[in-house]
Length: 632
Image: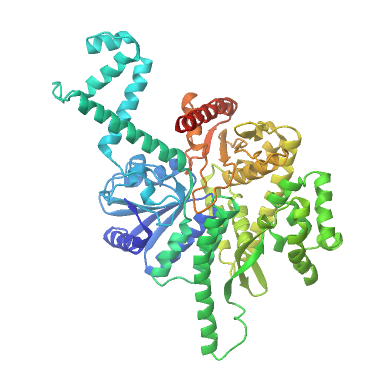
């Protein structure tokens, strides 16, 4: 059942009831370990469980195979249990995948889309998927589950596949008559489905058969359209859980900060539009203002009109520059390794670096001070940067709208940490884990969780920042070399562009195995390659095949070409082509990711996969053109 956000409190009460009724009185929480939203959502949930006195166990997971492994002991459970899935489970039939009985309740809080339409079944009270009403893919957009009709569609597809691969003589023998072409096979399939269990034919006239066939066809088109157009990201799980904390009166600055970091991550990785970001940001800003008023009231009651206590963590709204880790870097390095600036100016080349320094000169920031640590910089140059960048950025092919955004910052003692800084620090810590090594990933996930508690673990934040800085440098330098060496395939008029990291020197960099780093890399390559062409429609989707890990598995990621304006889903067009390409080549993925636009295959299959993908995408383009022509 898909549960709207207004019923969050009821779902939580059901979890408490199940926990109290089980023998060990605990909840099993499985959290995806590849993004900041999972880190923030798990921390929100665990704080909530601690305050409510619920026992739990949290296990980071990287794929559905690990989910199935950790759920295996519950397959024979007799008591009532609850399994809570964070940022995993929405896109699949998890109960069948893990063979879980009905006495095990599954609660799914997942931002990956599309939600498997089988979850949209109001009769299923044992599998609860939380989807808020303001999600880009709300419950109303998910086809209602119809088991009988869906089974008939599946049987029709299976029958068509079997008919294509069978000999016509078999059809003649089974049906008792011989007909030419595909018509005989089609008639035979209809007769087989038209028998009752005892072998006697059903009384079904031509009109009824035509109506049934039309219903199956409409259902197939509805489901196919849904899975083709709804691949992307929904509302961050941390925002949903913060709403629950607020309803239970447990929200504080820390919980708000977790929601802010998760939302900022989706904006930085272009998983939501700026309009959608601003819509959700305004809601968070309201909560921030409420807590600020409460803190000031507490100070007045204590008889103090001074600043906040030095040990107090304060969150406030602000307008921030979209310059990567500016507070922890120099102005020059932050500009040089910000993806948008690096892609537009090509800062991995000397000419691009000269253009960057020209921008600094126009802003009256001496190069000596631009290469000084930002924290030690005189305030006058900070003011110069913020006041002059809107004026001179357009003269250097940079749009001011892409260089600033309304955000939040956290203040603790003398430290100031922006929301984007926190995102990169968490990602730096997460990518320290080795893909395929559960122990390493669990350690990285725990470190990322600890970093959220800035007042206790500022040293962990700083280590994450250093790791993130190295990641940004590696992406700009290595991707720049790939572009210069012609490793990026696909020209101006290609349907998409792609690169195989194994064909470059970057294959030795362990970071280029991690899905999050590969997404960041794909976004940079997409923008950097489009800047090489002067036409406005030069931007294309980007596919990146990562370096192989110890098991010989390569991670393939894809990013969409352009932003979709408004509060709408940023649809990724490669989810279906990835699946069809693997099916055509009989490639069985050995590792199933939680999102459809990420795929793991053996390194021996990468070249063939990328080659076949071109044909599949071309077929999709031809089909879309035919559909447009038919509508015209």
